[in-house]
Length: 137
Image (cartoon, rainbow, N blue to C red; front, side, top):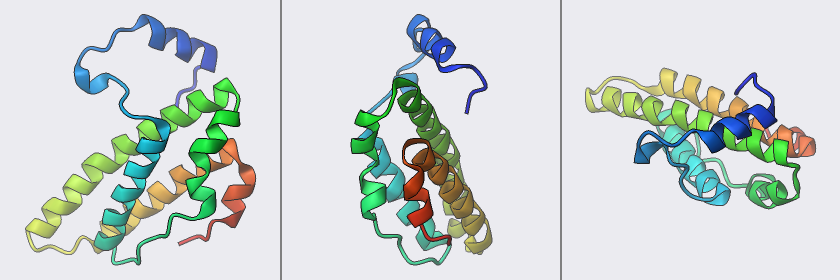
């Protein structure tokens, strides 16, 4: 997450043109939230955990974002980008371990905990009560 105030982050995003198509924000918040949870399902398999159901609290985040203030939406969007930046290379590394017939359970579990904590931060940003309802795995 950025240490800059939301107003400065917004101004920087408006004035900075994307350097490449990969830097263009893609998908809606709901689509990105769903993609993250699909990646989390893959991660759970690698960590030998049962797949986490998409609870009502988790599924409600995109709708809650429409009711959130602008600064909350901006911070949540940045947090999702940060989580994606953590998950993509992490899953690639875990798949490489698995392809080499190495045990990926311990690093997968570490990445799972990082994902779970980061997701909790996004949820608490928008709805602090949702975090209290999440079981700690």
